[in-house]
Length: 173
Length: 410
Figure 1 (cartoon, rainbow over the protein chains, first blue to last red):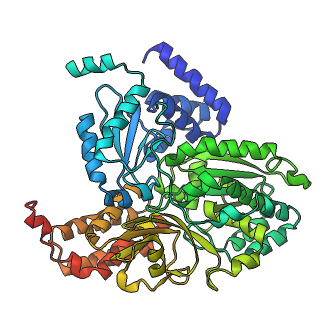
Figure 2: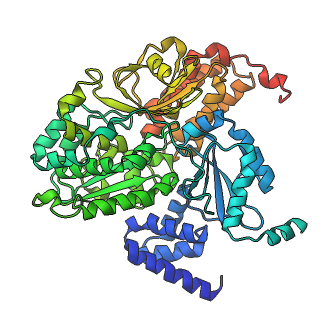
Figure 3: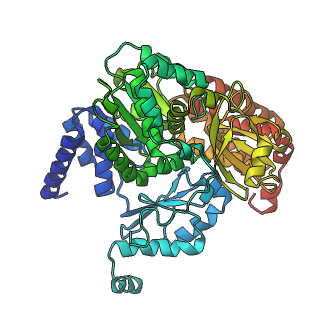
């Protein structure tokens, strides 16, 4: 990590500290901000947070490792979480899972080499009447069928502003 | 996301039957409460006989009364919007369409127990609801329904903040939720002391389910007698049910407490069901021969999750899905739950392979009963329920299986 990057992160975390406070109750909101902005919470970020809140960094690590939406390891720009709980399972979530793996070329728990997509399982996301359901970051997609997977991924790529030409080149590579 | 995929672009509307929440005059409950003494508000709620709608069924009036009696200048109202039970989505619908009623209920609760601060603990999976909820809160502040001297009542100050969860089912347990709010891992505390005595930051705290708070506002608007007149003697009032699975019309429905499973299945088009999972992963599996039983605290208590299992469903697959859920979501703090859920899952795998002796199955059931007794919190205590009820009711289906062997997976 460059020194300038470290400084920038330190400034950011300080600003979030000003917003949420500098006691322990501010810990999770600050970590959520870091996760949202950087798609991960690095050890360096944990140390800064620990110093600011005057707690041991292990306490911060304990919290980060407990919650499934907080991550130490880098994640993709888009985290796709497919619900695997009962009602979605009963409505063929396995077929959607297979298609996601085929179209992304990764398995569950992995991130694409270009850093765009992470594929994960989720436990019940509260869309049981409309399964199979998945989350792409904060966005919900329900009644997903295998043939819709491609459209969802394309929507993400468009949102990232990737031009068709670049995509073509990626395919050629 | 692109324009065609806005926040809920990929989401379909949830079917709902007619809900009473739509027919209550906005803020009527709060206006009525503002004219009453604290004791009268709690008295009204106690007279209604309402029990917590999250599933545990603790009388709401008693809970408020305990918190009101606690001696402390700082108290909190927490709305438990960490709806994580498999098969439950009623709180999502309430928060999407009737959030005013929930905030009204919180404000009434604040007045009743003498709290000035409310917190909504919203599960991370529902983050898309947050902008909507923040907008409603902001509007309520400008309408002077939140803030200082609400509705002109001297000293009636209350405000509500939203805090997000981060993907942990166990945080729906009230003490784990409080731990999470305090910036800790979401590991349940020992009870007692209960949150009404020692809750958030050590202060008396009422933790109520989203639906409970919405009904509280309705009860203050329409009166305890209205609520008590519906349902059964021990389970009064109306309840929202989240219905999913093998039925024609899944969605959120309002029924009086005490409705039989058979009646409910007729309403949603699932009459041919083989079984119904009541109460989600932590609930019980009810076979067709027991469909005359009722959904009430005195018969089958539930937080409202109803998963209809059609004629062709493999019950062992259902048990396996639930146990995988608990293995993932166990917080790992106490041994019966952490190790027991893994052992039960291994047992289900043995059953699927057709390799489980009756002796070992009985040992697994004994382990399940130990987990019910020895686990620290509700998650652990209820984690073997689905397994035990499926073993009990469908023993002939799950023993001596040859399907995996026949499929060449052995």
